Length: 476
Image 1 (cartoon, rainbow, N blue to C red):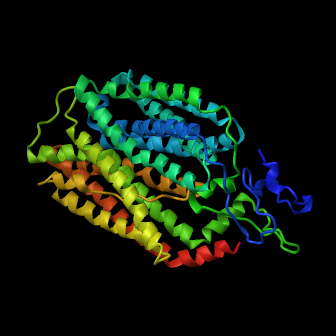
Image 2: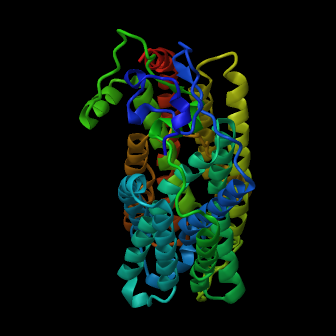
């Protein structure tokens, strides 16, 4: 709700419209500075407790994302899927997630967020548990269940960050959101580890889909008990503090006109003319393409490389050896956390001497990762260890909905399926030996190396325009 004390002693004529008021902020009376920093009283311990519950649930959220890649060989063998059909599993998941996210964002801005979060957790946990009982005769139901899980997780990913943004003041808000997003690589890696570990421990890969629902049940109980039914909502501008740290509003002076409201189409056209936004979106899309494809296929690719080397035997039993997923999951956790922390620190330091630090760091990371990926692919036939140390870059985005939509649509939504289709096409023209099973995947992954190079180029182009576009934005 609007804080009436924020505008005491101010005439009605000088008050900004509702969408631009400093909700929960202390007004600076008589100050002409157009930059208004928003602050709140220090949050109580309960605020940190609520954030901890949301971070724990975010961990489960991304564990569910990567359960399938962790036991992909078992699932492929159980349902008798080709590489193309196997890649389609993750494509269905991401597409449903991508399409559902804007819907839940709309609902979260207008209805009770706790109820939406609780319903989403219950829904995706229930569907995940149900998918563990699907017979091999009904593979299409398994595909459908992954799509439904994508819809359920979208309800959480779009709403939970807004609650954290509403709980904390400016300085702490950025820190808490960073911690929240740090659980993405941790949850992703644990998804591989949990899936492979449960399959190996029980001898049945279905159990991998029966643990996270129990964790989801605990998260639902914690949500009901600890998260308040309603939290004070901030405006969209105030939530932008998680990125910019300040809100710029038009100075309330006679003769100063506000920028007229624009339609959604006008906003899109304006963004299309912003070259920094365009090139960075394409760079982010390239990154999503690479990470999406590698995240799904690397454990299976390593298994095929080991078959060619003769270090493992063909999997004939019901549950296959998933040691590659365990190792890859552990590396994902470690390198993911290291990449986020090191990237943020490098950007913070370099930004003091170069305003183009952010896109230049992203470009350098993409070029290095593309080179490392290509070398690892070429060496995988003789040394699997080299393949484990492929590290893809990570970058904190500005949470712009259009950028997220494009990066998913052209990136990780289609890349797993595309890699599978290319692998199928290569195998169809050759014999079905272990050698060609490996090489078909190897050649398919080369696409990712080239896309990574393009991503680096896109970020370099971003650096050419970022200063000019930033100055233009500050003048609006």
